[in-house]
View (tube, rainbow, N blue to C red):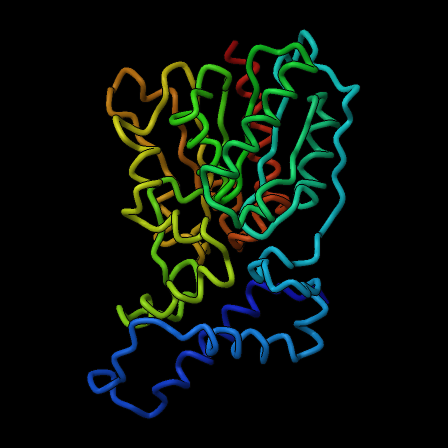
Length: 320
C-alpha cells in the first residue's frame, strides 16, 4: 500500500501541535508565537521513529536539508537530449516539479506527452525546490535556456506543479523569461498565494496554529514554502501589473480536494482586459470527471489531470 509521506507528516504535525494545549479551552490556550527549534526537531524525530515514516526519507547526516528535501524520489524520468520539436509540435515541453518533489514525479505525464509526439524535458533543482524562490527560478532559467538552445526552438511550453508554477511565473515576470514562453499550464499552483495552515495541514485553523506552522514550515519545507504564502512579496511580485504576461496563453487546473493550497481557487488567473480573456482557461479536474478525488500531491500523475493536459496541448495546436 502506497504511503504518502507528506500526508502522514501533516497528520503527525497536527497531532503534535494540538497536544501542546490538549484539554485547554481555545480562548485560554497558551499564547505560542512559534516553536523552539528543539521542539520542531523533537516532532520530526518522533515522526521518523516510525519505520513506516522513516523509510520514506533519506538520511541527512549534515542536518542541512529541510525534511521535504529528504523525501525519497518517486518515479524515473530522464531527459533525451536527442529529442527535437517537429513541424507539427514546434515547441519543447518543459515540466517543473514542486516542493519536495523530483523530476520523477513526471514519469507518467512525460511518457504520455512523448507518446503524443512532444519533445519533453524536466529538471531537478533547488534542493527539491526547498530553496529560495529566486535561486530556484534562476536554476530553471538556465535549464530552459539550454533546452531552447539545444532544440533550436524560440519558445517552449511550460507545465508547473505547485511551487513549480510560481517559479515559472517568477522567471517570466522578474527574470525576463516571458518572451520565451508559448503556453503555461499551472497544476494546483498557488498563483495568488495560500495560507500557512494550508501548507502544513488543513487542521490548523487558528491564528495561533498558523504562527506555529510558520516556524515548522521553514525547518521542514524550506524557505520557498514561506514565499508562497498569500501577501508575501514574492507572490505580490509575480502578480504586479496583472496576472498575464504579453503574448502568453495559460491553462490553470485545480482540484476541489486540494488541502495544501487554500483556497484552491487561488490557482486561477484572470485577464484584466476583456480582450485577453481568451488567453486564459481555468479548469477544475472535476470538470472532466465529477467523481474524481484528486489530491494536491497526485496532480502530476493523476489520470484525469494527464488527460486534461494532453487535450490542452492538442487544443493549442488546433488553434494555430
